[in-house]
Length: 414
Image (cartoon, rainbow, N blue to C red; front, top):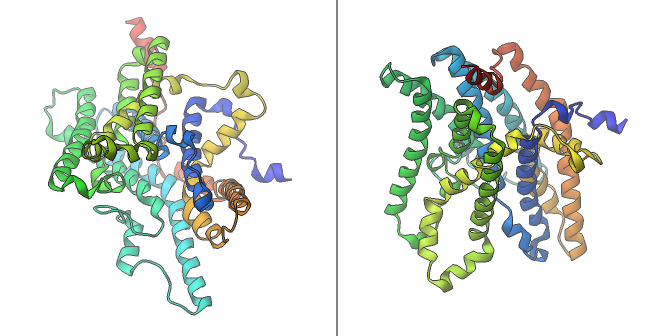
């Protein structure tokens, strides 16, 4: 009965296993970081945590790769970019992300109001104008997100990226010479977002003295519009250079380089090393780097992983045993629900109310946290997220699937 309740009925064989591994790794890294909140003073800062990449940045690159591929294939299939393509793209994206988000957001607002009413006190929600911004993903548009449902800073960045990149692509097609091929127009749009956002960060960074710190650029929409574009750049390479994309030796080399660069970027930005930068006299240089070049470095490093992971089509060997592949696919599927539920709804709204009085209590909260996250996320995905997402098939046109094999065969036959 329990197996039927929680089974998602999806076989790993029907999915790209490497991408599922990336998505599962990203959400597990994020949830693991939030799990340490329960430990409080009993958290000893495990060294291996400093070697982990930023799970949110990994999500950005993976999302950009998948969404960019859809956008490029749709554009190429239709041969031009118009309002119909744009509206269909947005409809499918928003049916995937908005219902879950609004359900959890309204649930948190309702919970806060009920608790305040029962306690006879004023609620702790943000002011009305601030709260309204959450419904339009404006909570961190120009400043860092308020102290409510803070994890949604990254979702706001993604949503605005879904708006700006297609609009820029449409604008490029309109303004650039008619003789320009679509491939060049797509690249121009991607580079416009990347270079424009990096220039924006550079200018803003130069206006504020370095002692002011990193300025929270990581979590502000206007300074992170390039976040998914590094993944989109990988999608561009896959679509327009399929022979190189599928070259196994090149995939392996890029994967090793990307893995090393990602690990080094994570470690050099970790709390472990930050404490030494002042002693070594490089703190100002580090702050400037984190305001500016850190973002393209981590984005491009993770984008280098994409060819190999995209080529990992099925689980084999140890991955296929003991239910490992099934578990990874399951976590990948519920990852968005895990993202929305783990921190504010579960950790802050409930588990933080349990006093952390001992080492044993702290770890009990951690195990309870993981159990609740996996349990509730599975239910949310199966009984709300997936049914609502499936509605889009009746309200929008299905987007074109991958054309890599067909394009590769065409080039071989030429």
